[in-house]
Length: 145
Length: 437
Image (cartoon, rainbow over all chains, first blue to last red; front, top):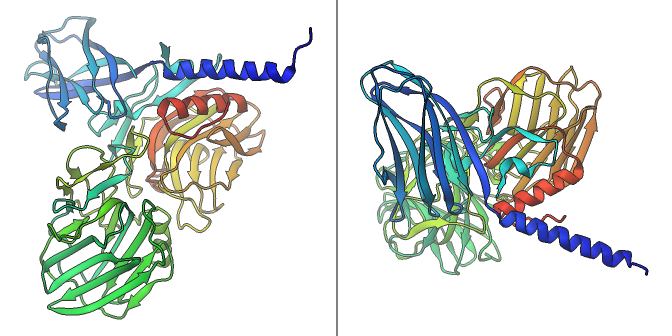
């Protein structure tokens, strides 16, 4: 039995294209890494995301906080809304507990859920007026887009 | 589910990767792979791939830029406009009252630039286009000068001039999309890249503006790329942010993505030093082009610069000296350049890739196609580099093209691998380049 090489090339090309299309349609797991410090009596934005290009799903944040025997930290998700796409308001559902005097190797994990197309979010961490002037924090943001 | 790291072929990984969707409050951009350096933004902002602002020809179809340029003895105005209807309309202007008006408008296929001052019609200079196509971009450049008089150019063509040297009147706000609130003949269409200055433009600056480059002394530059909200940020020295009224909205084409917005004047995004640029490696930059890199532009423009110093660098840039865009590797005392001629048009999307092999071969690719190659076996950049987007490592040679992503791959991608990656990015980002397998 002979095989038409041109037809075989066409089948191979079509298979490759189909595979490529499926990959392209799949959500991609993306990450962001941030190493910085919190500041006494101030709030920092540890991570942010912009969903102007389409929905971003399954947003998760994990961070490490250096030990501090006196400071309290308040993590909070902020987001915009459809009617006001540039103003950030608190979106903590459910409520996020404050972190009082983190000990050694303190790790924290939060889930934001999904971000609708056009929305923006920020994850902020505020330090109260106690503890060290700056406290080391590093985190990983993961999401599907 | 696949990971961003899976986009690369086996044996390759990202040394550095930046995705502007994670831009943090227009201040910093974390790295997108473990070990990647974050970028700190200086002047640069988060933005979008929006084409500009759409004006719906209603009484509220304008951007109010405030009471600026009163009594200006010199003033130039540059913008691009794409009409969506055949009406006569005011594109921009400033009006104190019926006796004091500076305005740019069209009657039929003729563009007018007119100055009334104290009830006197000082000039009404015109450029007749013959045809004034709908849904087609036109570049309009107008100026008044106490030294050189008035001037109007469209699409870099022959300038219409008038000898009048009268300064601008005082009073009235500057509007984009109209000359006042509710003139009854406001713009129907999209306006983008609106720039103003208060000096005499040189011949090179006029050419630069037509070709997308912003003069370094621009007083007002509204890129109109925010893509959401009602504030149009002025990136020039004037700092006169404009406010969109309800008849003005953001105009997206087929692509809707977050970007890092640079003004090409003094903006940049930069990492700390520490990036390994030893061969083999591959630079990747994806974005919306805002300059056309012609043969006679007056200055260089750096899209993506990885530099230890002047002797150890990798650059994706336009080089005025060689007239074209290029991928340049510098190291070990040699600097082979992969120069190429295909220049973009404004608002094109480019997947710009530069590979540097283990043997010192540098190759430039645009949208998956190899466009130039060069080699020198001595090419061996070393040291701890820092990354700069939007300028070069010396904080000069700005480029206002809009960065959608940038990264450095560990290893030199083959031509087939570059094509596959470019095709993936095209489809995943929806750039519409239709890169073939």
